[in-house]
Length: 404
Ligand code: PLP
Image (tube, rainbow, N blue to C red):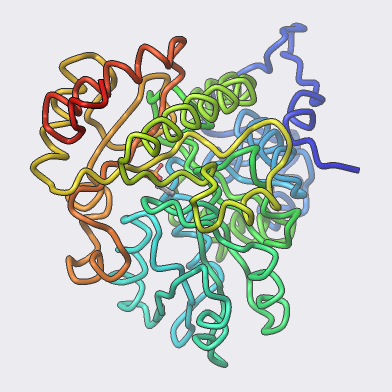
């Protein structure tokens, strides 16, 4: 049977304590026990259904976590205060001094900086590889490797990971395959393709309203329990917990994710096809010209398309900056980092979200100066958006006026 992630979310029935159609919010940091013995058992991790302290778990966080686990097809999930607050404890839970990670070289700049600059302090070393080349990845695996790390669709170059192929390698060498699925919620279900753990920045499409940061780790009950263990759980001890009021609001937004993803994808497809036809260097996994178009197609769930992320290359940082400023002036979107908002967001990753990556490495991975990353919004009239964008490009000499 086909995996239908949006149905899985919608099929969950949560009621508030007075019959509300939304679950009640647990506005408490700590919880009472009727007996001291139950409190002790809860500390030991043996009191199912009891809450101890909200850094460990709370009813509101569990509701959101269970909905996200249903979306990703995992046994359970734990929500965190940010995407980095999900990624960092997962890596630290799985790796210690002397361990090795093989990671995609095109990943979010913060994750890259964590692996490149921070974890070596703890004796954890990472090799960064071209994630589209399984032979290169296999060659990078050593007896010390514990984790394969990638993004299903990478930030910012939109490279697509062959999750099935990576999962086979992970199995062969007894590694954990961690996939950051932030760019492709609902479209790609990494667990169904063999991944062990899925992480998201909820800050982006899943919450969709650019009003908070948030994250989630989806995995087995055993792994999520280990993250929350009071004695040695990285999520519990590093303390990147989401607040209950916020998790209640993210849960409400999650319920419209399927509609939003369809619109983000339809709008991005329209613009990518138009820009490519106009002769602009355009990267979008939905274009036949994308090197991993067929791979994405082979992995995707029905309906949600190729996502809302697209890049164009306008040749230089000066042109990129001028275009972004003009597009903002014409109210086409905002010159801002992040993604998944109703309004289009654009930034030049080389000088913003990927600036943690040294310049020579940016060149090597194809992250050029004139690259603009777009998170395409929910525009009701994408034809109008396109014609105004095109006029901006003609005004700046990026497109020839003969195209008018
Ligand atoms: N993963 C990806 C793919 C991202 O783009 C980001 C942020 O831009 C993160 C993780 C980090 O998430 P957060 O900013 O919520 O900590």
